Length: 362
Image 1 (cartoon, rainbow, N blue to C red):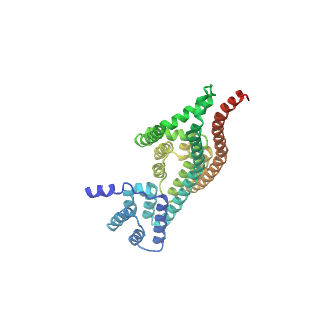
Image 2 (cartoon, rainbow, N blue to C red):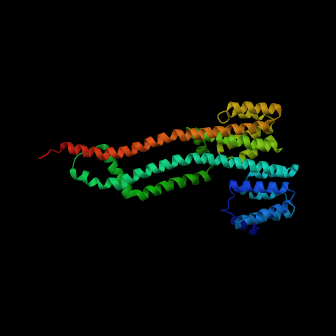
Image 3 (cartoon, rainbow, N blue to C red):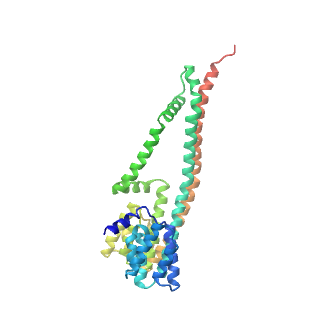
């Protein structure tokens, strides 16, 4: 027992990225399809792994499979590496004799999810870069350039404009108390992340606020709907029951608002209620079009294909929203940058201009 605890403790900082999970599923699918025994497949994948910690994970999986356990059972011990979704897809594939096919589905789904994440993150890179650049230029002007002119203004003993006085106060604060400012920002960010991880209500509140933000809320909603439709569609296609598929979808969802909605829906489905009726009750989270198409999928017995189609539809919506966000936020950030630099310029030029107006040639 102590060996087992120390083994898992040694893997505390180990992470399998989405790309690594995708490669694992692709390689395993190809090897199984080629007719290679599962143990030989795992040994081959282990040999191609360079990370010692990840080699330990594969060694544990190989040991479990050698002792007669299912691959999904062994992977279930490492859910934080491979995820609940992957474990269940593999479990269904093993039970139904279509492991290679389900692994291919899993690899394709993980690849799409990774591409979607990169698309959303990539949209945020440019606004963050412009914001950091704006704050950086403003801080340099305020901290290093403006203080060289400040003695001139102080020595004149004239009443300065409020913009200049505000700039002087800001400059003194940044020069004298910059360390406190940085520590305060670090403390606030650290406190937020700790509270978010420790208290579920804080995380729920943050996720709900995110859904209500302009632009970001629409992207978050479409992103979660894309993952919901894709995950549910693939699970149903693999033969998982609707109620169980909803629970698995909830476990693979990071946004707590959507996760709790999925759990509520799953409980009602167990009682025999159709999924479309429950989606209709959660109308703020699920659009009418999704509800109507899911209802049609239920009536025609083709719900998995309907969810797959909806996943592609909402992915294109995420793509359009991210593009429009980039094109919309760029001019706003440029204007804000111009305003900040303009305020500094006016704060410097205005008192100089006022002084020169009172100067008369001798």
